[in-house]
Length: 244
Image (cartoon, one colour):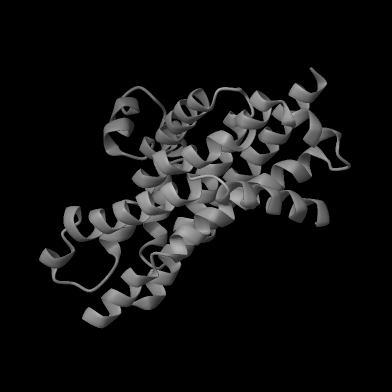
């Protein structure tokens, strides 16, 4: 844990010594507010809740989280500091986990900074705060899943732009897999088991359940398993690069 904490603190300091932290936070807060109150029709709905606010989170994370993840390993490989990092008395798993937790924590801070919206709906009405709290938790874990995918892909290339594009594309597939327009493509020729499997991989389906205030075991297992799988793949990729 000590090595993980040291690496995480190193990464966190890196965020705040560059404009990345400020730019990401400002864009995230501006877009969440705009989507919730204007695009989501908060005032027209006449209901004091944050349903519209959370509905747009998967689509915001689709681009903003890969932008955070793209630098995790691609920058290390480009500058050559990855060799220095891996010669330190830390395991590859500790390095991967430390970097991931730092970026995930940073995204968590951005989510916490949206608390004025929570205060706003409580001033305007009497929302179900249990549902809002559950939705925040679901959003945080969904961001972790996006981040784990982006971190693994970042380890595959030295180019941050390529890492961003490929990670966004991969996350897009996971997001879209549960939509009817995608599932209809498979209906008629694919077995029902395959269609159900494709639908079960969608961020939207699992996150939608959480935003209704229901924490189902299958949704929790989905996000945790996805994070664990991609972090394991991340470790394997770094080990291969290290051996090469």
